[in-house]
Structure formats: C-alpha cells, structure tokens
Image (cartoon, rainbow, N blue to C red; front, side):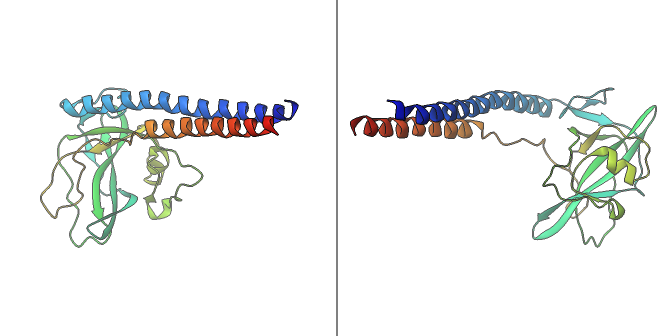
Length: 220
C-alpha cells in the first residue's frame, strides 16, 4: 500500500486541477450565454440616442462631425481575394469627448475615393481591446493598428482625449462603395461545453489509469 501513496497523491492533485478547469469552463459557459443574450437583445431593438456611459454592444445613434481628414486603418482582412482593413475616423460631438468610429472595411488598394456617411451614425458600442504578448505590433507612424484601443489610436490622430470605446457603424452602402459597414453585431464563439467535456474526460481517464495501476501493484 505504501508504494501507492505518491501515485495516489499525484493523481488526487491532478484530479483537482482537471475538475477545476472543467468547472471553470461551465461557469464561463453561463457567462457567455448571458453575453450572447445581451447581444441578441441589443440587435433586436432599434438604436437609441448615445447615453453618457453606454454599455458594451448596445446599439446607439450618434450625431456629430466626422473628421474625415484624420483616419487610421485597423486590422488586416481578406475579402474576395483582396486584402483590406477597417477605416476608423474620429467623430466630434458637442459637450463630450470625440468617439472613434469604425466605418467598415475597405481594400488597401482603393481606386475610388472613400464615401463617408452624413448625418447621424448608427452602430454598436465595442469595448476597448488591449494588446497581448502575441498581438501584432501597431504602427502609429503609418496610422496602422491591430489592437482596437481608442487611447493610442486617438493619440496618433492628434486627439488629446477620446471616449474609451469604439462605435462600430452598421448599415448598407451601394455595391462597390467603401468603406462597407457591418450588418450585424459580433457573436463570440461558445465552445465552453466542449472544453468542459474535454477536461472532465481527462479526469476520468486519469482515474481509470490510476485504478489499473493500483490493481496491478496490489496483485504483484
């Protein structure tokens, strides 16, 4: 029995870790379901006037003046074998900080001028991103960004302060007109149940392996 103490302790420790990871994924699944429900509700309702502190992914309508002479490109995306990026322009509004507006995708090699919307802009609120260890490096000098963080983008555009979120424009434009706004709110993938099953499967496999090892050891 003594020779099983170390394997049993190691198995118990790993079992706690695997079960903890599986439980965490189930908790994440509940959180993700709430987020997706929030996005569905926002998409099904008409846009509302921009509140002072809008929650993430709410659909809003915002009046202001687009500074079309100041724009940056965000990301790199291929559509129909053409490489392009999203066009982001600051929008000035009265009595509040400017808001960065993602007007949509446009090809890098654009042969016609960009067409900017006039009047109020409708879209959804996208929270700020923050660069991670493996994020592509931004190039402020070339006004090219890969992380949608309003503060450094605003600084590159010469703005002292901008709102801590981005307004992603929604709508339709004539075929061949750019930028092309999005048609719906984004929905993050929900793979947490599969991940939970994987971790719990590892835990079950670990128990079976230990049981077989213990049975063999006790017989010898």
